[in-house]
Image (cartoon, rainbow, N blue to C red; front, side, top):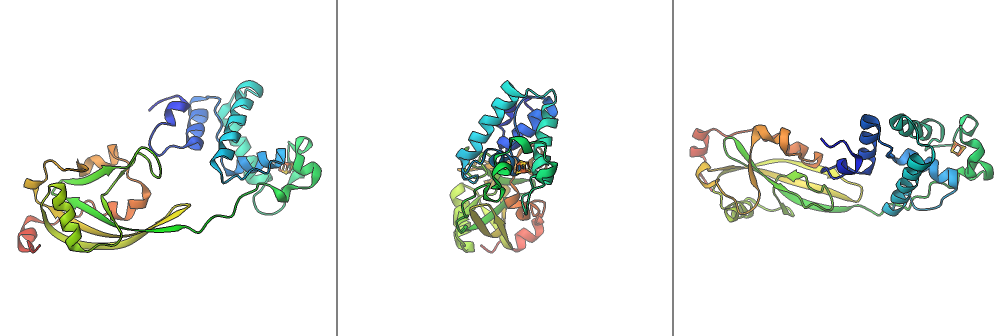
Amino acid sequence: MPDRGNEILTLPGIGAYTAGAIASRVYGELMPAVDGNVLRVLTRLCEDGSDISKERTKKEAIAWMTDVMQSGVQPTEAGAFNQALMELGATVCVPNGEPHCGECPWQDACGAFAHGTWDQYPVKAKAKARRIEEKTVLLLQDDNRVVLRKRPNRGLLAGLYEFPWLEGYVGRKACVEYVRSLGAEPLHIEALPEAKHIFSHVEWHMKGYLIRLADAGAGQLSEGLLVAKDEIQRAYPIPAAFEKYAGFVQLGIGAEEVRKQMDL
Ligand code: SF4
């Protein structure tokens, strides 16, 4: 585990807020942790009408707070400083309804308080309707291993591991063809329950199949990795979007049953 914020930020699934929270609270580094509460306080303080749903606004707020912490305030307890700012947003400069400006230590410096404009900040563009993506998730496993593949290093769930999936809802035949294209031999296939995962801008609607692979054909795959089931939790972070299917990883189908059901 790295102990510098900019290195923590390179870990899969860790964003600027989490990296700042860890670096400041655990290692005392002067690195901000800017969440929605902090953004609300800052935009009211400065009467800043930038759209807080934009990455650029968050980046500017982080850059400003980095400067405040490293060149201005230089708090002796970075973690407590970040926590105090978040608490100020959560309990005083509240998100719903009128902020409690009478209790706020920043009242004298606050533009929104001076001009009575607190209800105009923060500015957040109306979210677009979420796009719906349909997927067919495949739990490919032999006795002890399951197939995972690594997501790209950029974009949604960057660098995390996932079960292979096919675009759209596809039938058993297409799933079997895909498995064979990997260089593995399917022995048995059964449907899994449907699942849904909601991100900020997209919804995944998923159907799934559990496919038992023949051990002999599962040495080298053209795509993905064969991972020992008991290694997954330790070394292969699987995002919550696949949580429902991850629960089926231990579900094995006995050899006897496989022989009976070699019906593909
Ligand atoms: S004075 Fe009022 S609006 Fe300004 S930061 Fe404090 S609680 Fe928020």
